[in-house]
Image (tube, rainbow, N blue to C red):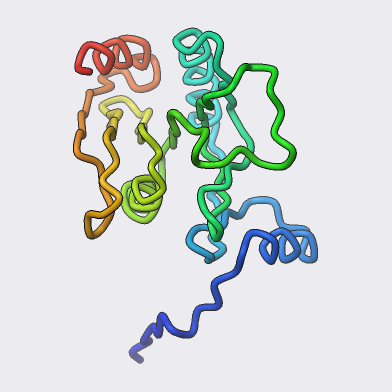
Length: 187
């Protein structure tokens, strides 16, 4: 049996519709990307540990900025995401009335154990399209890598970044500090 997919049959929703949808169904592990609701993978221990390490490292590197290990960011009218860690161009004690938006994001980070193609595909394009200045995708397993995307090219088809740097994580998440130092040296 062949199953065909008709992209015109998708109902894209706004953030307000999404909020109601999530509340009506008591959903927790979903994100809205370009108006489509996607399930979010369960968090493995390695994922949660990596988020903690990244939060600490970025908190040290961005004094005076708000660094968060969780929460939702309004990327555009049809995208409300939960980056694993992100840095906002506001003071640490600043609170948004509802969500931070793309204009305030300096850096978004996704820890990618099972979602690499999603994080380097649809998410990367949407981050670039909405002008997020810097985006990292991290595979924290031994022999993994961190990929830094900078200089968004929103008009490209698909939207992408002009600067892409990859640094190896030979010891997985234990290599994050030195790897981030390497990224900073490769500005």
